[in-house]
Length: 201
Image 1 (spheres, rainbow, N blue to C red):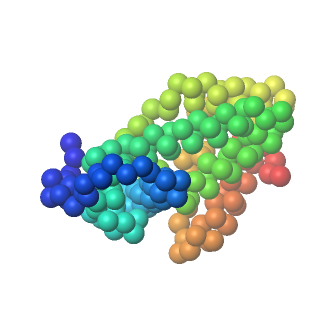
Image 2 (cartoon, rainbow, N blue to C red):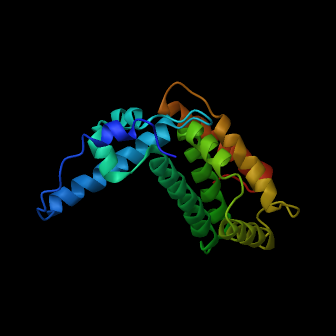
């Protein structure tokens, strides 16, 4: 169900004059969509969703622009979650297709912990909304761990659930500035890698 303010804010939408869209206008539309998705990641809170008006304001856009891209606040949030799921799948797929299993796992751990440190509230909300990893993600993670074990670069008893449990620590990274969060997430990633039996780079 959408935001109750939708009916009022939709009235701000301009009429379509039928004019063809130009290249720059398409670029502007893509940028605005990206800004709205970024705003959704910044304002996400488990159990306390931001309103459409708040999201538009956070993105520096009007409510009319918001509704040109997303019919409701829920549509924006769902799209943000879907993009996060694809990003998770892409990250583990890049790792599993890396010719060097140690490098692939190392990069995956650093990437995942960094993402959690940058947007901990959004990741928490994402997990609450979709707690079960996608089957494709599970398959690639199992393949990644299996390759690392066969190469002898991790502890021999490592299983995919161990990796997920270790990576969950990334959401606990807190600091006053982004630079500090990134520094702490890098240190945490090295500690996690050591626990998995893989030496940091």
